Image 1 (cartoon, rainbow over the protein chains, first blue to last red):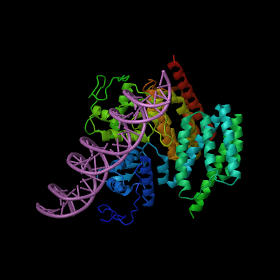
Image 2: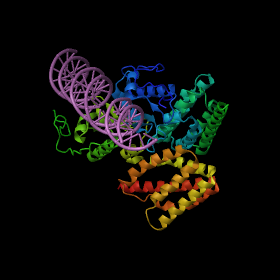
Image 3: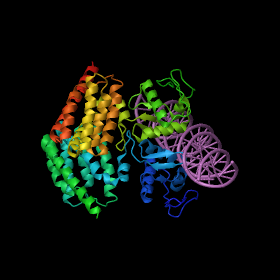
Image 4: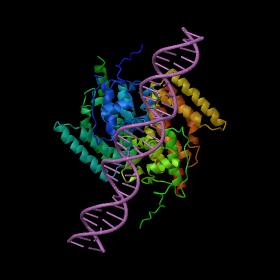
Length: 251
Length: 251
DNA sequence: ATTGTTGATTTTGTCGGACATTATGTGTAA
DNA sequence: TTACACATAATGTCCGACAAAATCAACAAT
């Protein structure tokens, strides 16, 4: 009864399977969290699983325990991990109500892709509506410029995602409410991590790009109705793509 | 040339104005953050202002610097404070893109009430729409029961806010996507803190309560159009109330 | 007088060690 | 088998020290 499912690496200095990824000296706390994220992926840890003791992590990453603790504190404050005295640090079963960190929660719950998209949809649509409503000539000019960039890159067959990001950020900027950008970017970030990395599907939304000039024009003209309609259409297409990928993945 | 604007309390043990609030030994990191919050309020610190050095805070609170650092790290990861080497720890001018903790950010930026409401609106409306779309008989029954409670309390002239919370939570539950509840509750919590506490306006949305039975009925019937229309109407009324309060406050 | 430089100082960043605290587990005795 | 006592392992907390960096002040140079 005593052997845990994963090999007993607690007392030894290092077990065989442990890849040790030494962090460079100037690493920020964010780097530590990224390294921890990779560690979680590598070892296939799930919700409720324990991660290695702090001293162990520190040794493996080549940093001090204080730094590990600081990083874990950050996650703890987001409700991602739960720490107990002897029980160790475990991935939280459910995210705390007053905290959220979508990238990790989503990574732990891949099936929530559609759910996340459902949350993103109303925010994106409202951001577009507000952008069309509150646009200034300056914002309109920026949006027009960005969509030109985007289409140039797209027509050239290159990677259009950075240009797409810039275009949409210009929209969030034009809507005049930074909270929208905050929330959407947060959701988007988690979305990308869970979608592009493990599923290897980098070109999600490819078919929606031709609609983007129309969207830009509608915003520039202040046509709320048309702008929101187009955004809805774009998001619906993306959603259809997600469903398709999920279905083929279930085979 | 050597005297800074605020009295020179750096080398001395304690200056005159410093209220020292010793924390009990068993204090959790949350307690430290609360104490820091009070300290910020007491000293009237604004966005961009520095808070005392870590060693200073530690002394004043009667805890170790490590504990202060852990608490500040938590805030840093939420983008509430920015730390620099000699510049000290300052209240963040703008929230980091990858983190969010609305309760505190809103408290620091009272004028963002309307912005926050603008973000909340599309989420609430979409949640209602999804609830009407995906409702089950069980969910419909719960919502009906909750709205009966609410109206009973409301008609009796008692405090209807807890019942209102339960009603809306039933809606979030019925929409079938826990992310909506997460995000909305987060926003709501910050909203309440900044609204009900300092402005002393506990009965925001009082006039919208009579609309709630209609909303419940629309959801139960699966009438998406009517349900979203009512929710829009409710939120518009709330927004009008907010504007009114802000105007009267500017006198 | 203005500008550039240099150096001291302050403050956060990082580390290591030590001990406390608390579950967990284990062994022993009734 | 059950109950209790004890060892153990992990986080929690504290301390002290030094590194790194940014600010400020004094000074020098043009």
